[in-house]
Length: 390
Ligand SMILES: *Cc1c(COP(=O)(O)O)cnc(C)c1O
Image (cartoon, rainbow, N blue to C red; front, side, top):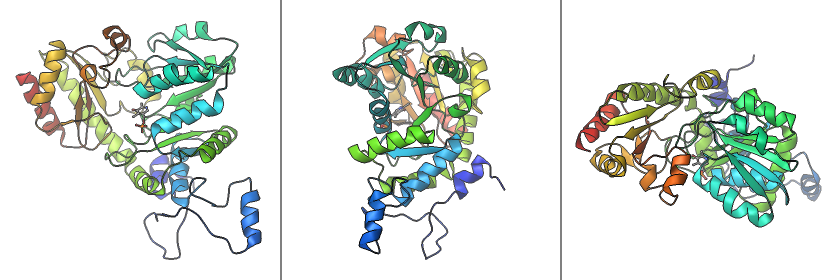
């Protein structure tokens, strides 16, 4: 009987011990033992990776997390890493070589942008950027040495959305590996492989953990691609810790109900704030006023848990707003059960020039809310009282 993703997120279990425990066991061990010298020799010779040798290579708790994410994303296989950045860097290092070219959306996570601009050139890998709002410009950036195309949709913090299916067609035509950072949506909301992405990756630190406890990353895709990435991670070392994998595989059991609630509250909040006199505009993928609303409706099952709005008063009112909040947390993380407010212009993106900020949609008064799981009215009321004071 084939199970739906909501069930697999809970029931897909890799290993049980002789204790017949009901919940997922935690295999907190660095290495594994053998019955004989011959078994040990076989384990090392085994290229199918079925036998656990050492937890940098594989671990049953980590495997459970990987198997679940792969199932939810509709992928053949996956690799887990210590952080989201390790997943992104490992993907670049595995599939790009000296002399290659990567095309990336300009609106990507800050550290991803730093890898592209500061580190990849050291190894002779060049990059070009396109505006998420102008996918038609991608074609003109393709060169004979273009090997990879990289996007985040929805993007952070601009919430720009790109049609995954349209981009995947361009990539197939030019034999380019198409990589999607699916962190903001999670597989509960969007499955990029269904629309033609080759590799899908996550910072599991965000909605996948969902409670702000551990860091983690994961990449999923076709077996032959994952095998190459696996060997890079196994040999260079940014593997996921079994403890973090245990936290994350338990988190997946509640992913679908959490994402439904995050999105319900986020839509309520976005709708309520739209007409507020101190707010210029509200952005949320499932608001009809979102520039890519039709694309969001096509490829996402709900609008996700992030809402942004633009305060009329600019940078100063952004700071006043944060200082006036009584419940929402001031922190740079997102995807937590606790609602979080951040002001990108004065924090995460303060090192960019105003011009660079504007290019990725970060206006001086932009506030990003990671909508948590508290009562929707309590979240709204805290934001309203802070708006009154700012
Ligand atoms: C946080 C984040 C990352 C980086 O993940 P870490 O787990 O912090 O290393 C990458 N992409 C997006 C979209 C993120 O929000």
